[in-house]
Image 1 (cartoon, rainbow, N blue to C red):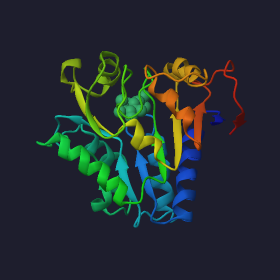
Image 2 (spheres, helix red, strand yellow):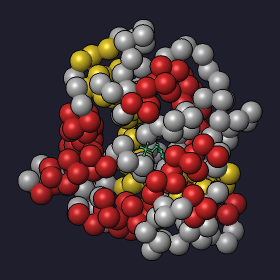
Image 3 (cartoon, protein in one colour):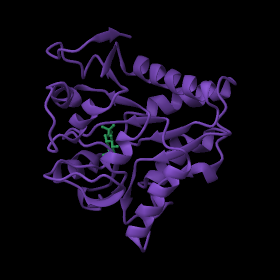
Image 4 (cartoon, rainbow, N blue to C red):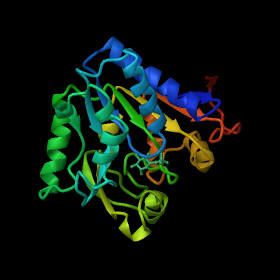
Length: 249
Ligand code: GLP
């Protein structure tokens, strides 16, 4: 894994945005895997600014988002549909028909998950996957546990995830306890992965990422098996204890 240390969140966000712009410049019809959470918001802002300056064209891009709460409606302000529209899609020239997010109101969940994986396959696969990280090491909503799933599936959120995400809701009881998420296999099939780690509260999980052990209890550790992962870390989350080739960005 390549490890790029950035002096602050703003620098990290700009660098990640530049990598995405480079990807789209090289392949205008790129397929991007995108993430929610607070970490990628700066990246989306930087991409919107680049778009407004004419530096990037999203017209041929396809997006698959990692996950969505379940059950939740698309227009619920806490849904990831709403998040993506508000923070990114409505500000750029992406074709909304090419923006895929699991349906948080699907009646037939198994079918929804199967069709989601099929759509990823039909698109030619994800060229660049953006990932954040939960404090417990989850990616997407692939939570720590004895077993991890390959494909898109319905999952139950851990208490720690519900607590972490409660800040976006009026009260903890309003946080959905389930979600539809892409599986570890779907993530690992992406050609390139950019993992964003920002802030003091991610310092512990960042260290674990480089412990050279794989564990389903730390889902993000499986990224060590992928051949093209770049970890973008800011100073607050970085630890000098980590033994890895680090580029200062
Ligand atoms: C949610 C999302 C993850 C994201 C995580 C971290 O749980 N499902 O994809 O990585 O939040 O969020 P934040 O960046 O706000 O710490």
